[in-house]
Structure formats: structure tokens, C-alpha cells
Length: 128
Image (cartoon, rainbow, N blue to C red; front, side, top):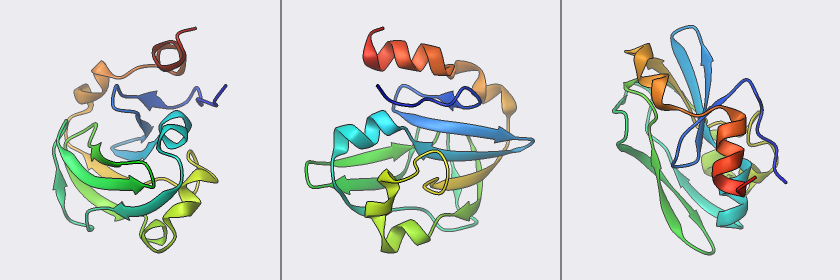
């Protein structure tokens, strides 16, 4: 059983969102990391890049697969976790803390309305 912090919101594509005023922190869930296996590469956008809800903002590569990362919101990247680019294997150590991917200045808070709570996400991925 994986951890899904209650203070986060979740997407169907396994990204999580931490909301702090007009800034959202985006990463991927422990469930998604487990499905990927050993992570070997991460591609993230630079600060100042505009991301669009539902559109690809980067990729994550493991020994099993290469997967697109999808932005859960529209806005401008104000911080990118570049430390993970040099050591992508560290993503597995703290997915909801130090292993966040982006911080985005969100344009429209109503875009968060389609996200899931921790219990809804748990039911989706674990069927409980």
C-alpha cells in the first residue's frame, strides 16, 4: 500500500498537486514511481516556460519505459527541481517532499476542480 498525503490533489495521469495560494507544486505519485521502476532520466521545463493543463511538460524514463508528464494546470513555471535532472534515481526517495518536479504560478484556480482527493485516487489505483 502506498502513501497518498491527504493535503494533495491527484490526477488520472498520476501527478500530484500541492496548492499554496497561487502556486502549485507538481510531482508524480509513489504509485507511478513504483510502476516505472528504476528511474534513469528526467526532462523538465525551464523557469519561465508556460505550461498548459493536460499538455506534456516533460518526460520521465525508467529501465522499463519512457512516459510523458502532464501539467495539471495552466501557468508559468517559477521553479524547476533541477537537482533531480542530475540524480533522477533520487525521485523514489521522497516523492511528496524533495522530489517535486515543478512549481507553477497557476492562472485559473478552477482548473483544480477535476482533481481527486487522496481517497479517490487510492480507490482508482488500488481498487479499494
